[in-house]
Amino acid sequence: MDKDEIKTARSTFSSLRRWVNVKNWLETIGGSCLEFLTESGAIAVLYWQTNKALFKKSPRTREVFNQMFKIGVGSLPLVSLTSLFTGMVLALQSAYQLQNFGATQFTADLVSLSTVRELGPVLTALVVSGRVGASIAAELGTMKVTEQIDALQSLATNPIDYLVVPRYLAAIFMLVVLTIYADVVGVLGGYAIAIFKLKISHYQYLHRAIDILQLKDVLSGLAKSFFFGMIISTVGCYYGFVARGGAEGVGQATTKAVVTALISVIAFDCFFTAIVQFAF
Image 1: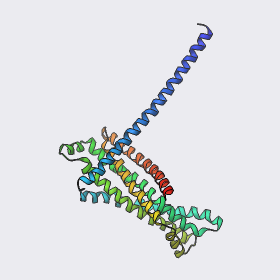
Image 2: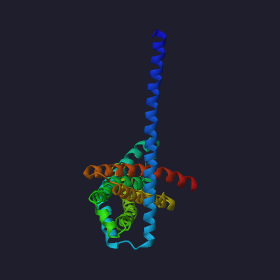
Image 3: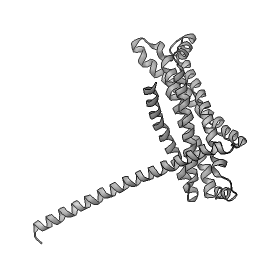
């Protein structure tokens, strides 16, 4: 074999190797896309079945209140700290920039609008996603791998009616309540900075913080939290139902539930904010 044939063979082998690498790369992307679409469709189906179950049978009121206590009361410390320090940091950073224009009095406006429109609902949803979403996925995942859910089905009990609906209703209601609480705490955090650091009067801060708000600002933030509750509960329940492989599978399901819920909350917030801003 002469040198030209050797070069041709090497070139062909190099091209073939690059094609194999590209093929593997495309297969990886295609597999990830199919997995994403499959899981998105399955979550949408669970969401539809849950809403349909609400109108077929009355939810277990006692279990709904138990879940409300777990989701709402248990999340209060984290929501309180997150909202308080966020409001304080927002006031400090805003005043740092506004003082260059002699407009420190507008700190109250910025803190109030930012908290009610965006930071209150989103930060509350992120905190609840990490705490409650993981809890729901781990609890239902443990029931799945220990065949307790199969036992419910063998007793002619619908797992969606028995397990999903109470968590779904509790998450929706408590996300709205926690968002209202987070908004108040966040504004009070900015109030503390305004009074003790920026030397803004009590009346001026509270008057501006309340006067700047419009009804659509409050309603848009509460509407976000309403849908965030749907997302967190549905995602957590789905990954709990599909857990496989014992303790390791439960851990993987819990991780997927938290990551998916966090990404879904942020993505939905982006689209919802764009729609509200363009529509109103």
